[in-house]
Every structure is written in structure tokens, then in C-alpha cells.
Amino acid sequence: MLRVAALSAMVGLLAACATGMGTDPTTGAQAFQVQNRLLITPANGGRHITSAELQPGDIILSSTNGVASLGIRLLTLSPVSHAALYLGDDNIAEAVGSGIRTRKMGEFVDDESTVVAFRHPGVHAEQADTIRRFAQAQSGKKYNVLGVVLQAPFTLQRQYCELPLVPSLVRDACIRGLAAIQLGVARNDRFFCSQFVLAAYQQAGLQLTSADPLLVSPADLLHMREGDVPSVRIAQALHYVGHLKSGPVATEVELASLAPH
Image (cartoon, rainbow, N blue to C red; front, side, top):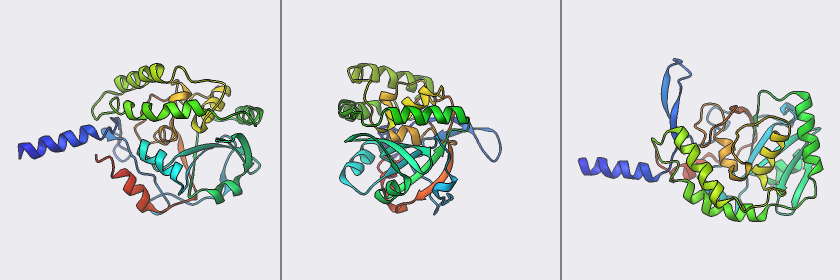
């Protein structure tokens, strides 16, 4: 029995699943929380929305059925692999391999298998306009290829910082310190998808986190939602708005099962 318990504990430690203390929504009491690697969907408590319900500045997280998306999701143990910004007037801005671009929301949704929207509750009209102008000013700029290349070894090594029961302050310092060593040589005048989102928010004076955008992945943005355990300290939790498109729940469960809690 003791051997089984020890083995189970070891498996849990190797799962690199961040933990923390939060508030139980039903009782209001402090409760132990484990980072949630599942994505709420309309099939398990979420809701379907249309682009008419989006607001400028909303953060769009998504995934496709392609090999690149699957690789990112497996590496980060997350159901999302891409991040974009909703600019209003049915337009989104995103950083992709060909560079920074804007396009219609309908076209974006057609190309993705899962599309879910989150919202910073403090975005005002002036700040949304700053986000839009910043995103449009970056249009055509090159993609941060080096930043993405450096993300792979960083993502693997940062999991040691995210072992269960590591205090949030220690976890945050560990991840930032590792990023300073491994990502410090990356250019900061080009962007990959989630870096682009964080940079736009910083430009508008809305810091989701004080962590360098270079270390933030789409998975990190997902864990900044309300009720989850973020990997790095955040200034504001994101509200779940809804799904514009939802993929198979089984895929999300399978990905989550790679990191047993």
C-alpha cells in the first residue's frame, strides 16, 4: 500500500500541474485548487455565442486539427494552441508564420476547430481603441520565429517550476528566472501569437501579468481565466465569454489525461 501511495505521489509530481489556494464559489471559503487543463465547452457548462456578442479587446483562443496545433497542445498540455485579438467590426488581429495580419472573424472561425473568447473586465473604449491601433500598426511585421523556437525547451524545463505544492510566489519566480536565461536572447520587436496579445494589452496600460510576454503561451492565457490556477502571477483574471466554435470534448479530455492530477 505504501509503495502504491509513493508511486502515485511520484506520478503526480511528474505531472507538473500547478496548484494554489482559491475561493470556493459555493461557500466562499479558501480551498485548495489544481490547475485545470480542461476547456469548458457548451457540452459541459459553457455556451455558444456569435461574433455579435464579442467586444473590442476580447482575447480569442483557438486550436486546429493540424499537426502544428497538436504539437503545441501536447507540449503545453492544453486544449488551445493559438491566441488572437478581437478588434471590433468583425475583425481579428493575429501573429502567424507569415507575419502580423488582420482578417474577418468568420474566416478565422472557419479555419479553426475550436474558438473560445475571454474578456478582461476592465477594458474601456479608449483602451480598446489603443489595442486596435497597436494591432493595426503591427500589420505586416515579421513573426517572432526565434521566440517560438526557444519556447519548446523552455516549456519543457519550466514544468519543474510547476510541480504540485510549489507555492505560487516560488513558481512565479522560478518561471520568470528560467525565462530570463532561456528567452533573453529573443528579439522583442517581433511577435508570436500570445506575445502579440500581451504586448497589445501592455500598450493599453492593461497588464494581465507583469511577466515578460515572451514567456506567455496560449495555455498560460487560458489558465488566467476565473477559477483556474495561473502559472505566473496575474493582475486580473479573464472572464469566459463563450465559444464561437467547439471541437470534440474527447480531444480535450485526452490531452488533459496526459497530466494526471
